[in-house]
Length: 271
Image (cartoon, rainbow, N blue to C red; front, top):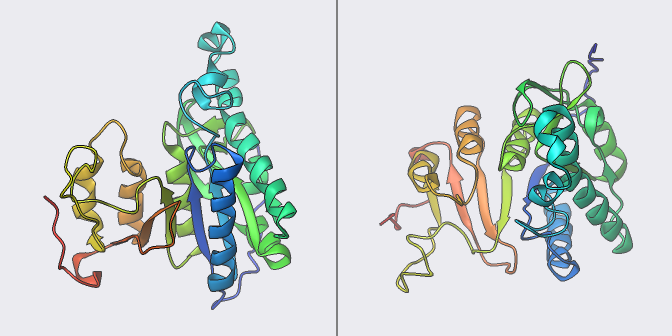
């Protein structure tokens, strides 16, 4: 499939961020109202916001990726069909948050598939982002200021939907941030930031105000990392600042800087 490369209209100096909302943040209307407030605040402060969403919920929730893949055992025989089904969770999430943003008076546009300009290669279920053409995104931002993009997926050279691995929406957000040269990428979580330990088992844990990304990487070697390690490595490669925040609060989160010298302070340490 031939790619139609266009020249981006984005002018230097335009303020722009990416905000990533995961399945927990998207799980119900009450949680999504919190997402919408963060998007509104992002628009006030940064003028343009690219919203990247994961599928609604987790595990056995009705619209989660796992639930969609359990619709038929035939998906084990067709990886292309399996990826198409898996991608629907993020498409549904994008449609839902777009409609609720409109309801709250926030004009926006959903871009998906070839519209999002995310090109992939490799194997279905574990594709690699090989190129991003942000032209349609920047054109849409000039009209609405808010663009919603389903994460976890791209289009291969044959025009087929290809997913990019579990947690791939994090990689989508950071790859878009790099392509659009945003000031930073924000991740909204059910914790207020990166903690010095697990608050469920250690009552003395505290939140880190900032850290270098190489300090974050060892903390991502868990079953449920705060962001996907593959995404963090890409952010380090592209020198993209990250900001990890709590979905249910406006308090300061944790800034993740590309290098130690970029840190605002070193008063906190990881235990």
